Length: 583
Ligand SMILES: [Zn+2]
Image (cartoon, rainbow, N blue to C red; front, side, top):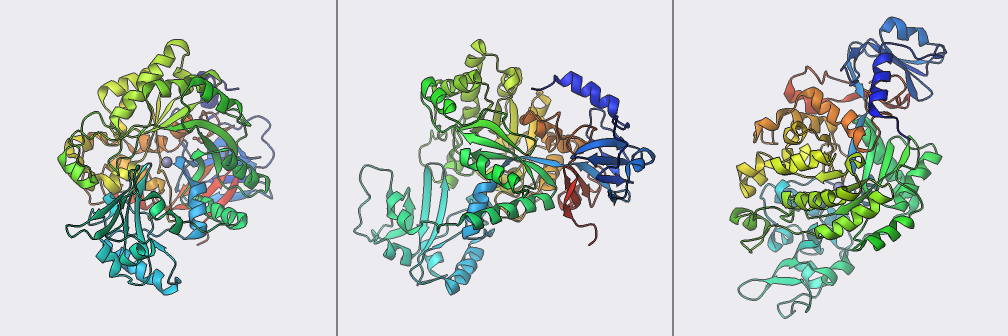
């Protein structure tokens, strides 16, 4: 199915600056007078490129490419501006974003005052018995760095039930205002439900503080989201994709979906309404034995790699540990007292949570690799990465895994041993620089500077020889900078290059990478994660005609401005999907 890398590289090197044979007919789209950063193996910069029938047919000098301009060719005069390959965003949850947006558009709130103001606004248009649900905020991104209190929520409305929900995986904490406690019939006399992890937190006088740990059935019936019609959902999904196009994204990996998610993308494609190429990751769930895992795979209606250049079946995904914004990432060493206080844990030996033993991970890996599936793991902490590598090494003794491109998702705390082991196993990394930007300041306080020096250590992984893709883990909202998580790829590249947090601090300057390396992590190296590096990720003859014309020169502009770069035009398969040229 896939030609060996060496042959493709030799071929593409030969074709640079050339026009592919038989391409004398006019092109559909031609870009002239550009500074086209091809990201080819020689890092060539050329003036012009042409796309016909969805693929680049010429890349090189103006004089050569101009010959392909016909009556119907769309010509973009780049006027010396920079053009890069279409950006590849290897970690989004666009389907989930769309479902939520169709119910209640996401708003980024950054302080308790902003929460109160938002609640007051909502109260004006919400019937009195309806619960107001505060949009998701992570404590690391809330100015106060703590949960709001019951009385702070009461100050915003005394009449509407309000709930602040802080949740990741199996850990959930809620804060209710007084009206919500009343509606849920939680009083000083309400006991904690027996046999579970649910806890109604009470103050010294025995009054509920409003904080509920793992509330489960206490509040779930009040928090049901409204049903969304197919029509509204698809409209929202298209809006999410348009937002991607506007910021230069031409391909995505849906990072935790299912058969239905895949069919959704197929449906959009069939209707001619798909504006980003999508690889769909399939949730593997928790299969304990190799037999259970094999059965799950057997029953899937497709195989890994099925599909086409628009919609393709991606890897199987498992969730190995929790998250670093919640103190549940599984670490090698205990979090320590400051972190425990920040996250609300009391066990001095607390190291986070892990969902699988290495043996169970191994069972799932064996089944996947035996049937030709790629696999990826959500694994945030260094302890979790050790577990995955233990399992992968054992599988590798019987089934060579090096070509399977096993992908570690997040993998926020690289260390020398893990890097060496991962490199030997051909492992790739899918990670999120904007988290360092948004959370680095708060995490440095909680986890200590030493740990933060390697947090999202792009240079660590890269120097070890691993392919690293930078992306966002986009989960809520539609604004590239004010979503959770911000999906502006220029912000990701800015952080990769400057290693600055939102407050401007630099923790671990040795993790900086060059601008070109950052661009590779968002294009050709990102393509590598889905075995797509011969199809896309660079501007070369024969590859998919995806490109972005930029407002500013990514390679030479002031570093502070990288995050503000705006696409003037985004092209997918030769079709302009975002056009700000005439503005
Ligand atoms: Zn994710």
